[in-house]
Length: 218
Image (cartoon, rainbow, N blue to C red; front, top):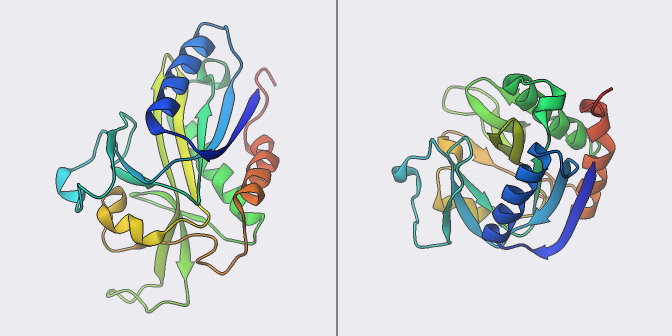
């Protein structure tokens, strides 16, 4: 499997073109699986369930139709995007299990920084409790989203993937209703008080990947 790490900002259309070609090559047995770690310039992507009313500032940043699952998502500097091109033909054709593995991978990576990520029924992504914030209107502990997940499959090869907020401009999320959820906020590792860099997150993702995803054929 190849790990690809790109410094600087990668154009979204260039990233999609790479994934399209790589997925086709993996499906044809002509290329290895790949995880690509990168950053994008500020932009919004619309998943297949996106509602136009959730794009509250349509002229702020470029908006791309992502054709992945999910709703509107923000990508930008300070956010680590991990595009995951894995062959589920060889890993078991179980989409729910694969999504669960991606969630477990993010949670394991966050745990490297003593951040306790959690999954919530009906709320895609990974969440953290905010005991430093006021209780919600229903008297519950406030929770913020720290990582997003959005996938697409073609011939049982995955692409798109996950994004972890390391140190993005959180105000940029205000141009959308992230993932259609209005009652909870968005956070980042730096917002949580951790002096974490993209390189730190890359190391955590690489370390924990094998704890969740077994090698093909294992």
